[in-house]
Amino acid sequence: MASAPADRVAAIQAEWRRERPDLDVSPQAVIGRLHRLAARLTAELRVVYERFGLGEGEFDVLAALRRAGAPFERAPGELAAHTMVTTGAMTKRIDRLERAGLVTRRRTAEDGRGRMVALTEAGRRLIDEAFAAHMRNEHRLLGLLAGEEQEALERLLTDWQERLDGGTGHRVEGVEGNG
Amino acid sequence: MASAPADRVAAIQAEWRRERPDLDVSPQAVIGRLHRLAARLTAELRVVYERFGLGEGEFDVLAALRRAGAPFERAPGELAAHTMVTTGAMTKRIDRLERAGLVTRRRTAEDGRGRMVALTEAGRRLIDEAFAAHMRNEHRLLGLLAGEEQEALERLLTDWQERLDGGTGHRVEGVEGNG
DNA sequence: CTATATTAACTTCCATGGAAGCTAGTACCC
DNA sequence: GGGTACTAGCTTCCATGGAAGTTAATATAG
Image (cartoon, rainbow over all chains, first blue to last red; front, top):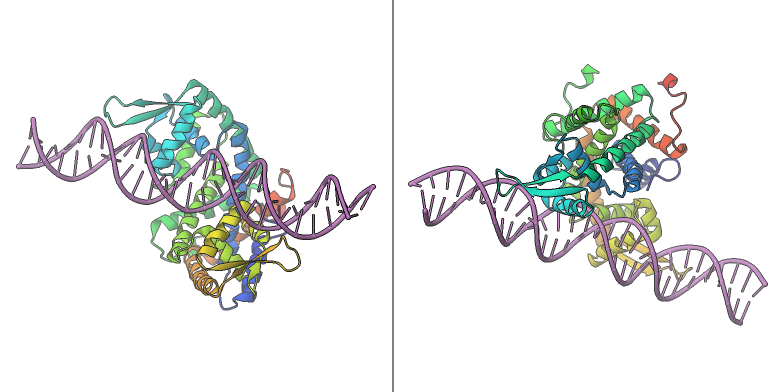
């Protein structure tokens, strides 16, 4: 799942430069590495989820409920938006969690269409333990970077995301000057 | 699919800090953002793949064959390793590509067990065009970062990946001094 | 040479997620 | 208050990928 010897991305770029010298494949150095690193980190995180019998999707749902605060409930559509999946996928995640006794479903009083998904006591205990383990795991992974590296990376990621959200493909403007 | 107003990751951290003040959730600032940015970029790239009637997996296979150079062929197991999926997934990708007339399968002469997957002429034309479009797309996305930002990001991603591959969870050592 | 182990690809089965349509409840308007 | 539009969740169907087992070919030990 991770990169093989040395640096796979560099090897891929070298092949392209031989085969298609007309193309500038330099963006792969960043985008390809970002892609692979994200996949690698996800695999590392998944190990912890599975230790608690959870898939990534189920962990995300339990976490979203937990951080909502007492009484630890949210509507399915809200959960879908939070965890960036469709409502169809959310229905099935909730099915699994309900079957495992970690959440319950109920109708809302105000609106007969509305549903509420809530953590059970077992669900709250599980996610509290699992999330603490998850954080220890993230600390371990992030600990491979020095403090200034962490800050620099956070800044770069945040800025890039903002620019993606902001403009519809416009290029960087006045960025070089502000450090 | 992307982050909602302002900065979702910061909002998530704020919720955790209210609910679990005993935990240090700072790693999410980097890992969470990396995760979301990667997902966002992948979605952007997928648009181009789909314009050519390809899924991400199929694009990857055609690209791996193309950059192998003439005669544009590789063994299924080799392709599976290159694109980081299991051989079972690769079998099905090749099935789809073969059905679409973009690749052919043949037995190897030396080893009766071995197979070779090769680009057809139609496959080579398609991936040449699709990959050029893909690179234009990556240039557009990366163009949101200034040159120095690109270099800094590439360095950080490469270093982190190397340290993940290298040690089995050891912490950073002697890194603070060489920035 | 025969038996055993290994290897590569394929097959089968299952879990997950997306897209589109369905159902039930609500809001609005005349 | 009856008709229309909307909304939220659910259901159905399909595509994808992983895990484990199967098949066929090759290598190796005795």
